[in-house]
Every structure is written in C-alpha cells, then in structure tokens.
Amino acid sequence: MNSTHYFCCYVQLSSLTVLLSFQNVSVRRYDTVIFDDFNWQVRAGEQWAVVGENGSGKTTLLEVLAGKWPVWRGRLTHGFGEGVLLHKVAELVASDYSFNRIVRSAAQYYQQRFHSYEAEIAPTVREVLTHQLRPVGTVNPNSVTVSASNISESDLLKISDLLSLTPLLDRPFVTLSNGETRRMLLARSLLKKPQMLLLDNPFAGLDVRSREVLRHALGALKDEGVLVILVTPETEIPDSVTNVLRVGNASVQPSPMRSENAKLTFQMPHYQQKQENLAIEMRNINVVYGQKKVLDNINWEVKVGEKWALMGPNGSGKSTLLSILTADNPQRFANDYSLFGKKRGGASMWDAKRIIGHVSPELHLYFPQETTVFKAIASGFFDATGVYFRKLTDEQTATAHQVAHALHVGELLQKPFKNISKGHQRLVLLARALVKNPPLLILDEPCQGLDFAAVEHFKSLIDQVCQDSSHTLVYVSHYPHEIPSCVTHTLRLEEGRVV
Image (tube, rainbow, N blue to C red; front, top):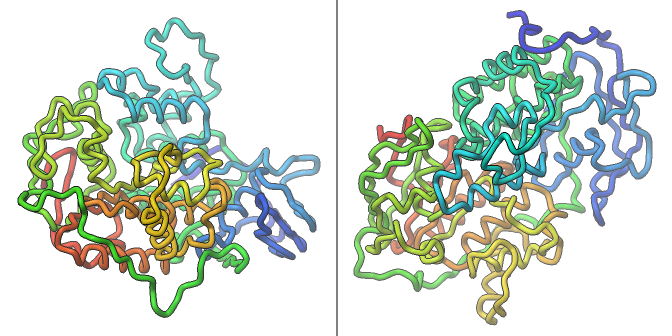
C-alpha cells in the first residue's frame, strides 16, 4: 500500500538522526515531581510505546513533548530543524472533548438537553474535523459567519476512509459512540499532518475492528516517517512499535497494593423495594436521530440481582441504551421502561439517578477541575458532579474514605481532581459510583486508562460488592478479560438491534 495516499510526504531522515533527546530532565506537574534526572533518546524510523502503572507519568511525558509542561531541569533537544519549536511539529491526540472550547461546551449542553430535536443542530463530525464550528445553540446557521476551512475535501475523505468515518461525517458528533468519538479525534489530528503524533491510550473504547483500523493507520504512519509515541497497556502494543519505554515514579503512586485488599462492607441498598422481581424492564425501545435509527425495538428484562454484560461493536447502540436508563437521553420520554417496578420514561431524571451508580468514559468532563478528590467521590451521594451543598453525615464521610482506600486513591483525597493522572481520575469516578451503594450499577467501560493491576483489583471489588444478591449490574467493555467473574448474562447489540 502507498501510505502517502493518506498522509503528506515527509523528508526521509537517516536512522542515525536523533529526533528527541532528554538529558537529565526533571519535570514538575503542579506540586509533584513526575520525572527526575530522566534520560531518553528517540531516533528516526522508530515508533515508541510508553508503558507503566497508573500515575507513573506516561501522559505527562506526552504533554511535555506537546509543550503543555516545561522542563524544570536538564535539556530537551530535538532534530526536527533548527529554530523549529517542538510543539509546532507535535500533535497530542485528544482523549476527550476538552481539545476545543466550543466542542466541549456543545458536548456538555447537548448531552444534558431536554428536547430531542436539539441534537440535530449540534455540530456534525464534518464540522468538527474541518473546524467549521458555530457557538453552542446556534439555530440558524446563516446567522453566524464561519471562516473557510483549510482542510481540503480530498484530505477529509482520505482520512475518514482510513478510519472508517465516512458514513458518519454528517452525523451530529454528540450522537457518536465512545469508540466512534475516539476515531473522530484521531482523524482531527491526522488532518493537521503532524511530524510527531502523540497518542494517549488510543485503543481505549475501540472494538476489535476499530483496533485493527488503528493498527493499520499506525503502520502507514511509520512507513511514511511520522514519529509516533503512544501510551498503551503492554497487552495492546501494536506490531509497528519498535521500542518500549517503561516509566515509573514511586512519588506519584497511590496507596500501595496490599497483600490483603481492603473490604467494602456495605449494607443492603436502602432504595430498593424487596418485593420487586425485575430491576429493568425495557419495552420496544426506539431512538432515532434524523434518518438514523440508533435503537430498534429493544426489549430487555433484568431481574433483581442479575449481573449482565452489554456487548457490541462501536456504534451498535450500547451507550444510547444506557442513556435511556440513566435518564440522560431526551427520547426517554417517548419510550416505555421501568426500573424496580416504577415507570421512568416520564419521571424526573433525579429519581432515576438516585438508584443508579454510573460511570461513563466522558464523565470526568463534567467535574470542576479545582474540586478535591474527596469532594468528587462524596458528590456521588447527591448525584452531583463534584459540587454539593449539603453537609455529609459522619457515616457518609467514613464511607467515602473507606471506598477511596479500597480503590487505592486514599492518599489523593485532598488533591485537586485536575492534578491527578487520568488513570487515578478513573479510579476516583469508580469510587464515586460505588459510594452510595446503589441497587443498580451501570459501568460503561469503567477500566479505560487503568493498568493491568488496577483492572484486576477493580474486578475483584465488583465481584465482592456483587456477592450481595440484591445488587444488579450492567457492565460494558470491548475486552472480555475486563469483565468481572460475577457476570452471568449477556445482551449483545448490533446496529441498534438485539442479536
């Protein structure tokens, strides 16, 4: 395959050319030293995978290369040309909507909207990729002047084809699945034609086919001479990678793993009505965006105490189905479903949320970055996003500490949420979902960004919590090894239908 069919041509450099050189480098992130006396060299023709435990500095290393954090001591030099600023040739692929103020605002607004027609006026994938963005809530496109795009249609179609996005170009971006969103963010970065591509857990949230698409794209980039550095679990290192960098720094690790893990001693969920046999009843559920039927006549019954895996490829409708249950989708009003025997379609969203512990891949976007880890966890008692106005009881305070220590983030409680690693943020949000001991746990790809040890520990905690037959679980993952052993039932979706 001629890789330049997809990407622009770069000057071929000798394999002896040093593209990056860290010489006794120290880096601080807020009040924490992440790297001290760090040495590393990268040569032309290489493709690197960065691996390590949660909190070891993997993402920070990418952010240093992207110019987000300065070198505190030592020297960082590069071989991309004299006088060239390193961050000008680098592209750090966003892992969420935070890359752009308008897109982030639109994501927050439309995902909390109350009228389904508003999704149709959200920016499309094409508009996000070509930077043709109008302010949030724009009803009349002619009322706002948007600058001409510097992205050619041919480049747009080539990259969209490479990443299997072409059928999605005219879809509102807020209707994409998590995996489709990740591919869109990668396409946005590739369209900038960077010389150095920095990828933070790029395989997270991708189904089997999408992971193959990404591996193919990484091979094409390597053939063309683009330097790729990616943070990834050791089990997901692609064939195109030539070198592996293992990083670690005990100063930024959470509470150490103990030979005897902390126990979670919850009482029976106090919201649950014992006489109810069914936790979830979904009757002929349909969700439509424009001409696209995202969910097609879904019927699903989950008995109290059952543990289910919700499976299916990217775009199959999993996240949309969950958004009905969590009362985040406005089309719930047009659908018939019950939770623990109570009809929820027309009920208050807060009535639904009070009986659900929920984690989603984009949940961290809604948290005030200055809130502390403790407040982020404790906000789960009130279904808030990091801010609450009621005083905690002594029992709630003790429970928040207990759950935090069980998930090995107890030593981070007083740190601002923004100051901890993405892996630790994920653990904090898992703690938030568990803290009120809800009768229904909905965990949508909860292990994204966690290292192997953290995944295994989290699974053991879920198995422990779910020993109680009163707890009901719905668990989403594209990786069979991430599914806890307590799961005994599976609902599989494909193109919005049960298969």
